[in-house]
Image (cartoon, rainbow, N blue to C red; front, top):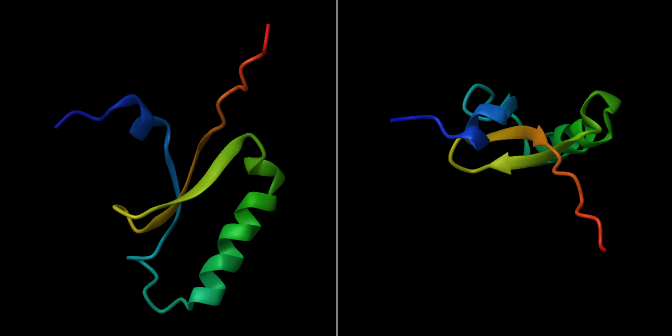
Amino acid sequence: MTENKKDAEKLILFSLKQNPEITVEEFFKKMSDFQKDKKYENYEIFFDGDLQAICARPKRPTPRKS
């Protein structure tokens, strides 16, 4: 199986599989903290259901209207 470009750019920030004891409230707090972190300001923070992890990928530049 080959890794596609999107997967290569994806960063796993927090894995639920490695932290099964976390509560839903703690999980959403972590997600919010990553979204506010200046280190990830150029990243889209999202939950990857297949990986069961909070992940980040570079934001796409917004297309300019002509």
